[in-house]
Amino acid sequence: MPFRYFGFAKTVLVALVLATTPLFVINIILNQYAESRALDEMQSMGQVSVHRAEEAITTTVSLLQRLDRDNVQTCAAEDRAIYEQLIIEYGMIDAIGLVDASGQRMCIIPDRELTAEVVLPPLRTDGPLVGIGMLERKYLGARAAVVSWDLKNETRLFAEVTPSVIAMDPGPEYLRSYRRTELRLGDNLLWYSIGGYTSEESNPSNMLSVDVPSELYPLIAMVQAPVSAAIQVVQQLKVIAAAACAGIALLFVAIGVWYSWRPESEANDEFVAAIRNGEFIPYYQPVMDIETKRVRGCEVLMRWRRPNGVIVSPGQFMAYAEANGHIFDMTRHMMRVSSEEVGKLYGENPDFKLSINLFAGHFLDREIVADIKSIFENSEISYQQIVVEVTERYPLEDMDLARKIMAEMQALGVRVALDDVGTGHGGMAYLQKLGVDIIKIDKMFIDSISSDDNSTTIVDSMVELADNLGMGIIAEGVEEEEQIDRLMELGVTAAQGYYFAQPMPAKEFIEFAERIEDEARERARIAAEAAAAEQAAAEAAMSEAAA
Ligand code: C2E
Ligand code: CA
Ligand code: CA
Image (cartoon, rainbow, N blue to C red; front, side):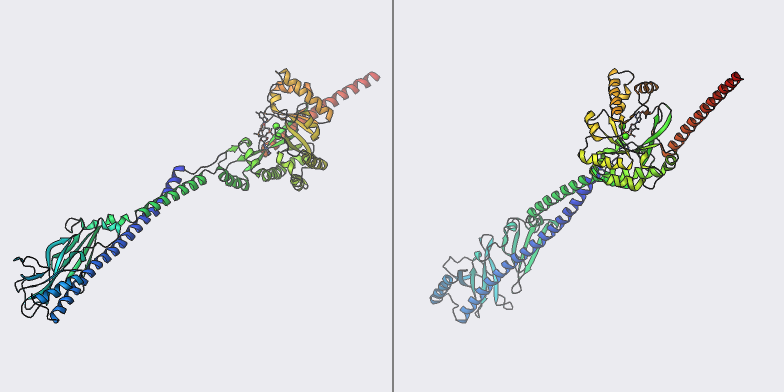
């Protein structure tokens, strides 16, 4: 069967492209999603830091303002008691005290040794009332802040803000291990920093960075995280997407494979098209009378003439056509075309028989009888000229129905021949039961007829049986002159084979038949003339003798 296959490699390639393209797109979408999600979270991390710092400053400032208002603004014992009280009350305040204009502590609660350390910048009379400074004291990356409030007498009240107020680490787990958060005060006073990356170290193209300034104070939070950390969050989704795409790819490949390796449907399409295009045509092989050397008729043998001119034998497509039921259309087509092509020849030679090959499936449905009627009813070929052949090679499924269908054909005048006799399963009983009109002895027996005694005996008994049952016999596959002599001895008079002619197109068959018939007529004419001359001579001799 000349099937066509799509390239397998091409199919796989197309499937992979179809499946990996969405993977690329999904990858990009997921990365973008991950980055924008990380930026959002970093923004809110920054906001939390800024907000916390703002709150700490605001709370501390308002506390100091309150002390000023209440005139609690000295290092005196009664004031110190109030400071003490407030430190207990406000968890975020570590210490309260006073500094002088130079920024040195005058007193501090709880009591600490007063060093010369300058904890605040020198007082500036033109500056704001609130000052903020940083101490060295650190807790979890945060420094203690000092918030001061200017008093009238050039001293300042101050409070130390515990570092833990802002030394908290907001933000989602997946960013926490990689991000760097910095909270800066004023120009460059680092209040809080956490995380492994410093802004200088990192390559900005690999980093996501967010700045969150405070609207109340000169504070700015900066959050940085590597893109790779952000993307981590979609890693699982990517695995899922990859798995899904792999699944889709596999599906595509499977569909592709199915699509490209579907000889069935592929062949079917091709076949249906070929039927429609009339690519199946009848060839005709003469059946000869070996005694008279005249044409008895022919067997119609199907050929597939491909558009490129190649002629394909039925062995290449018949099993397929039968298995797929196309044979019904094809057989109708054979009958119709042959009735057109050789109708005239058959009209002129009413003794010619036309053998049509049927298959077992035709004997499961009366439609074949209807087909024969509709095609040959008004054709130049009469029912009496038609022979249908059914092979003995494969069993008929429903013998009773087959018998009835054959009987209906026979009632029309159509003859039934059993093909390939001797090769099948049925044996002699089958033959009798079917009630066929003709048996065709398979080439297998004819091949060895001259040399093989066994074969001769089988053919002998077939001939005897056929005679007894009143059936005709045709010998198939005759190739040698010797075989013809043996067949004549055995009493077989009809034969078919390459010895006489191969199957051929209608035009050639018609020429062949006309030539053979002309020759036969010529022979008959000569014989008749000779006979007449002989007769005349005899008569002349008689009259001479009489005279
Ligand atoms: P078959 O009905 O037994 O047809 C005889 C086959 O033997 C033909 O083969 C014919 O070409 C070949 N043949 C005839 N004389 C000789 C010879 O002397 N020597 C050799 N070696 N071969 C010879 P073909 O045409 O190839 O057909 C093969 C088979 O295909 C047929 O066997 C028949 O069973 C099936 N077939 C052909 N046409 C049709 C059809 O229209 N319908 C159905 N159902 N089957 C068909
Ligand atoms: Ca046949
Ligand atoms: Ca045969």
